Image: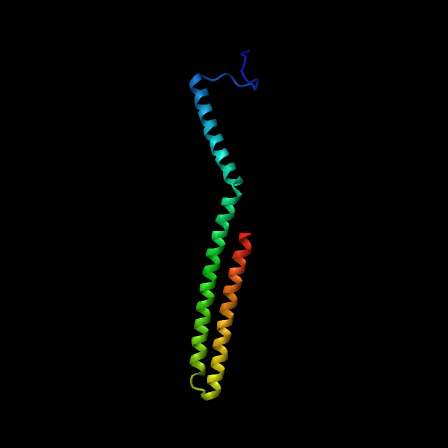
Amino acid sequence: MSKDTAGSGTPPQSADALTADIERTRQELGETVEALVAKTDVKARAQHRAAEIAGSLRGKTRTAIAKARDGARGAKEKVAGNGPVGQATRGVRVYSVAAAAGTALLLAWLTVRRRRR
């Protein structure tokens, strides 16, 4: 019966095989350490997430503004031929659209500001 070095029941390996195994283990350990360091870097992860959210909010804000402009154009075209009543309604609708766009921008800004804390 042969004696093994680790007591695990496997026969001893050659020096080249042991060296290759050690090198592979070092590589795996290095990758594991890098992954753990990345997970523990909370500040970098938070900054990355904040940048993602800010980009998303910018896109949503642009979309909301574009929709508001399109709606305002459509309303303007509908109201254009209705005389004095149509002109008064057009002003109210334009202000409503502007107020909605301003509110969307304010909410986006508050959300980004809140997440930075």
